[in-house]
Image (cartoon, rainbow, N blue to C red):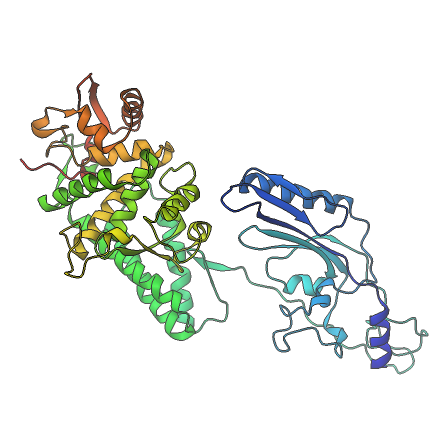
Length: 502
């Protein structure tokens, strides 16, 4: 009986399957190409990944609308490649156990998390339910039996009592109800994670972080407590699972907790109006401002490429590698700077020898926090006598890098999608104020020659950048003459300044 069932299973038609893929069109270009496994589909080229992703989804939907009716007699398309997702105990479909598939034939769609490919396939309902991320878009009628046996012949697939023997049909497997996924940050918390107390803590932390993001006003003390709890939970999770990336996340949470606690303790002043919200006014050490200005001057004299975008990128990379000439970088560090084409800039910096990478610029832009890319700036590597272009140490380098990142990613600049030139000007002016926020030594303003020496733009473009910063609530009473820029930074951004020495 089992051999007959297998013989008829092998005679069933294989399930249909087609895949739409999104790939880079060429190296050094943002263009992408769309390919489809259907022979009649021609390759498409789009100017950007976003446009390509939208076109790929539309192409797949067109196939789904035009697809002929499902065939109840088809066997799972996933069986053709040895599907392993729904049979963890065997690791593949077992030809000796065809009854593991079940339910009507469905049309399922599966995609990867990064949005690089989409696959539609005919498979059974049970395989679709066991495939992570699969969505059913169509279902056939009830599946046909494996063989046309006589009415009184017992079959393992019968759901009704067998007349010849009077024995009841075997019980069907109960439907599996998959509980909803629980997440903390972007990580899925496994259903089988033990101890249960750890899983409950992770679920609660995920809910608390999401609730914190909805708060109208920040609470740095509460945020520090949440990060400390997350660090402890992730450390325990790493111990029981052996996943080393969890330890990295735990260390990042510890650092975030320390930073939030420090910011909360540094609230030393508030707006005079009692109805106004408190404003953080940390007082950085005078040496921090001196070192920040020294880095700006060094970058102005040693940037190998022209333009404010290259100047800003070189500045941020210098701050990341200033102590030893080496550091770690992820794609988000570059994409958050408002650069027009970060990949092209990185390739130019590596091409002229100023920057060294273990891979390509595209791989750097694709790197994530759990797998950062090591970078090297040869000109910043200390000499044999351990001297370099800067005199500050590791802790000061970390402070300067964190300060620059806060300025360039300031909330209103980010929302306004400020250009790299605007962010570079904001960073420069943050080092050219007195304690009250007035621009220049003694609050008398800054000469245009001093500004354009640090921000490589002409006078006309400088006026446009000043207007952008005024609209972003960085300036009050800004005035640009033929020789000077005067004005005052707003109370809101004073915490981001490194004031000049009195």
